[in-house]
Length: 319
Ligand SMILES: [Zn+2]
Image (cartoon, rainbow, N blue to C red; front, side, top):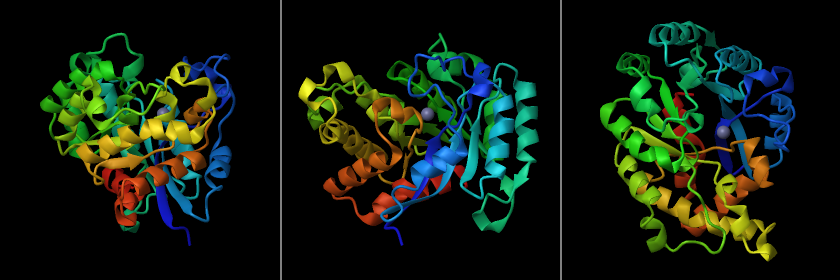
């Protein structure tokens, strides 16, 4: 049996026959401009089965369209229990239609959801594409309190797809909605410079760290350990280390150490962010190994690591 049991809290799937759903997916985006199907995903996660077994996943929206939820739920329904939850996009500018859409999907029950053996809704969260919107304060200006209280009532989560410039607004959002379950995707995408790993002191003094520390002090806020290789500023890596995974793992390590300090192992979730992590030239199996190495170097027990790799996603998304 594999040593690690893993829920991948964050991956995507798309096919080019729905290319118009993904305005950001342009032909120059090699290697993303191709089909990424569930079969491809299953193949990717099968590489590590001796040491780590990905037993389930959360499929996250990549399109600002409600049609994509329909497709994602169908994929999950037919995934033999691999995709245990779906985080979808709804048009939050129209609260009433948005609540209708959510309620429609909450009534769609699936036997893929295994908690207490009862069929449950596959829709576990919502994600507006905040990082792509021109207004960093969009979440405060345009998401209605009525929608948030509906999300709280039916217990679905808010995935915050943000960059560091949004953190100050996310703090106000968290202050306004202390009951909403929020997860910060990709640790809010800090820019990781490539010259040398930051010292604890250097990192703690960044605005990103100060904002994340405040956010982590709120028990309704979690964070995904995902997407960090993609945030390494490649042009700043010394040429001899450009393809050196160990060098890049060392750049990421202070960030993961800091996230564990502020969120503890109880409020972090591992995610592959496949296939986007392919942009950084790595595979889910390599990313799992890098994280295991970092967790071990930080002295984290297998039990603590299993919180991050498995239990927290199950608890947060009620998988
Ligand atoms: Zn992603």
